[in-house]
Amino acid sequence: MSDDNEFSEILDNEIGYIVFVTGENQNNEMCWFYASIAPSKYEDFKQAESSGEYDLADYGDVLMSGSGAAPPEDVRRKMEQEYGISDAFEQDYQKVVRKLSGLKF
Amino acid sequence: MSDNNNKNGTQIKKGTSKLMSIAPTKRSRLFQWAQDKGYRNTFFANAAGNTGVIISGIMEGNWGRAASPAMGLVRNAGAGAAMDKLSAKFSKAAVLPFFMAIPALTNIPMAVTASTVPERIGAMVLIAGYSVKAISSTITYNRMKKADPDNVNKDGIPTKIVKGMSKRVGLDLNRGKRYRYLRRKTRKARNRSLDTIERSGHLMPAILLVRGTMRTWDGILRTDPAAIGGGLAYITGAVSMAMGDMGLRREARQVIEASNQSNAPTHKSGRSP
Image 1 (spheres, chains in turn orange, cyan):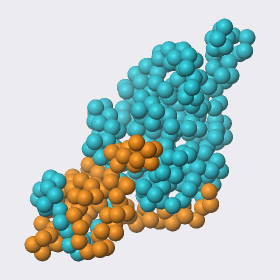
Image 2 (image 1 turned 60 degrees about the vertical axis):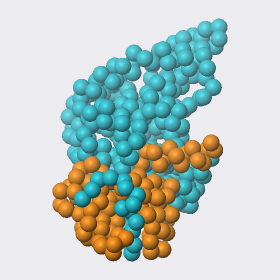
Image 3 (image 1 turned 30 degrees about the horizontal axis):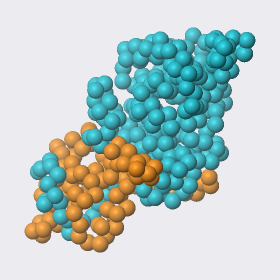
Image 4 (image 1 turned 180 degrees about the vertical axis):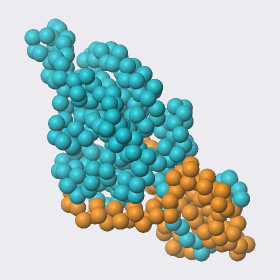
């Protein structure tokens, strides 16, 4: 196994990008998911999302799922407790990435 | 509501997503370790971003370049000056989470050794397989390198550690006999550290670590920051710093501040052990 693949595998085994996904299922009903996306597949996942239709399981593990547009409060609490989810995470994360991108290394 | 991974039920149309966190996977060795240790889920979940940072610390050399595309990153990093720039740009509170992750990912004595900012920290984490052995030995090895030349055996292995000599740490993968010799020498000290910290509660490693690292920031124990800077330059580092900015480290920081104001245990020399 090359170093590239080995590292990628280690990374995917250790951490996941926790995402909240909403959309329509095959029956055109609203559904939601909490999923852990493998870091090496995150870009592909975002591309698939923008393409319109995809299978979430191709990119990571579904942690929780249900019907409707939003999860019940108890599910949300559980996710907060177990995975540290936060609505502000993406925004703050992008803010720091922007900060970093201004640095020259 | 379901809690499964049924592929048939995961087809999505017109979907939108939002990144909510970065967390260890259930199959993570780190996760297993934390579970075995009885660490609280909340603490561990909050440390999730830092997990990525440590892993990013591994991204030196070829691995760094390999990891960049894998994680959607384009920036090549690892320059020795990176840490200087980062510490100038960001608050200590933002950078510290990086160090706080070390005990969570490896094992508690790493917190102690990190007081000197290992210059190849990522490599050590990986090679040690989250074991403390190589890390502890590395510290001692570097101490021994500076040992009194009059106190060496016929193989050139130092036989005496001169107190207070250790200023730098590193990793020599080809140390052979010297490594084995030093591993024996460090065993007692390592066990002592474990006992102390285990009794002190789950946040104690972070406290010890940050205390030690602060000294590094003050220039006393500073070593080559290349690996650290390289790791921080990656997106997982960014996430960790974001988490620091966001205050998700609040709990840990409160304890750290309380510790700094109290008579928390330190090495009798006044430095981190």
